[in-house]
Length: 442
Ligand code: SF4
Image 1: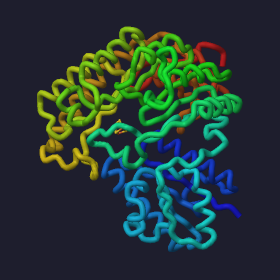
Image 2: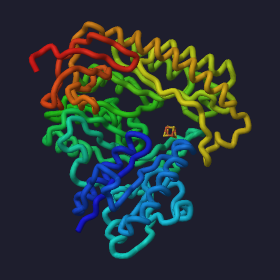
Image 3: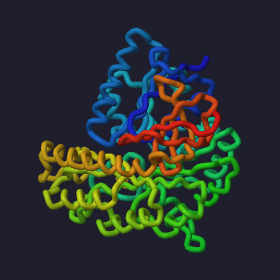
Image 4: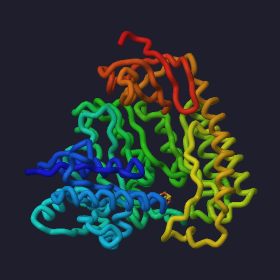
């Protein structure tokens, strides 16, 4: 008889997608997925290593879950993802009683691990970074919006980041496989695909040729744009390096590509960008963002910024502030630098006091509240085509969707609208979302 599995996911959208891979592999092997961890006899924590704090939380959770074996001897507990890859078999001593450790290239092998546990093994570690063959059935099958992984790992070496160590230095899936997955998703009813990779615009770089000046990533976007049934395409995340004219042109040439770009900048100071080893300078990033703004004034632009990076002084922060104001971001994720053990930046002796970083974060958050509201005002009293992705958890009569320019929109509706694009008149704006009413009879 199959097990009842529950997967607890920490971290980014990539981890969410990897949890789906594990769920799909388990279901295909005859196991079930349950929504409540109390009902499970197989518990998996899909972990994140981005900050030391994320690992501390995952370790605490794992110890708590393993403790449940006192009342359920049949229960098996494992850890997957970035922390599993980074710490490997050390996790068996950090979490006594842990049954398995599954690295970032091994998600699809989870059913094999469960088979071995059921055959009597107590501890299993699979840690190779090579990506095990992907699960056959598309994960988002039947959902209005589905994520599709196009590449894993990262070839950059930012001085604060652990990803190249936990996910490898970059592999990509064959284009034909990705397009086939998107076709299968479309046949199953999916209308929007989100292409995922650590740096999506590096897709196939140095392995696949450019054709007529178009990078492999642009060629992939063109092929997905041609898939019947798909109405919207998004991608997460690009990098300023390699974001060239051919990709900018896609936003006018490919009608399904949403005008919504999340471009992590991290800092506006050249000195700090160099210390971060980001590979681009302030001018390059600024001119790219301003050319997107000029060409597509309503495009939603968002970013990630780190304040308080080691050595960041008032002048560096001022440069970040200026860049932030010059672009008028729709949204930004502003993080205080937090040392990541095992990265070069963590060993620097010029760490910025947390109180200084906190103050800088507040300054940018206040600025963001003003710019987001100003950007959202562009859409007030206008009718937007809203793609319906879900509902408010507390009130299923309120639909949640996105406009073509990435704006989050709430409006009264019903479950019948899931996966449809509905014209919605915007009547109210907030800092992070819009509210409106459907203008056609729904
Ligand atoms: S680009 Fe830098 S921050 Fe992003 S995943 Fe790669 S190494 Fe990490």
